[in-house]
Length: 171
Image (cartoon, rainbow, N blue to C red; front, side, top):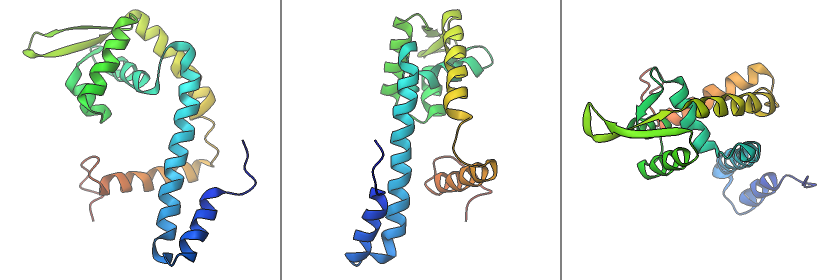
């Protein structure tokens, strides 16, 4: 699409002109983070489309793939992925319908449901992960040191909003 001028920089100039100088840098940063998230989600969802996956469903499959037994309570999936229980239930049902996951009552707790990755799900998520590794995760357009610094800055920002508990980062 390639705009001739960065619209976020233009917004920052407009913020300054409106007299909001103290908040213009923060507005530009937050807006940039939101835009990068949109670009990444669009790119990733396009890459995953041929697999019949969204990024949310990919994350569920990867979490199950990396779990010790290949299965987790649906509530634990939501907790670890930090998403609403209804979203996890929907993702798991869609994955089950496609044959990538099975669901069954949790024998240890009659109230919860376990989601387990199938062999088909394992094969699919491995192939999808290879594509994302090649096309997205190894092609971040920043030098390694900048990636590490940005990750740490965003980690601190998430901690500030109590996205996770990290006593070492609390100020």
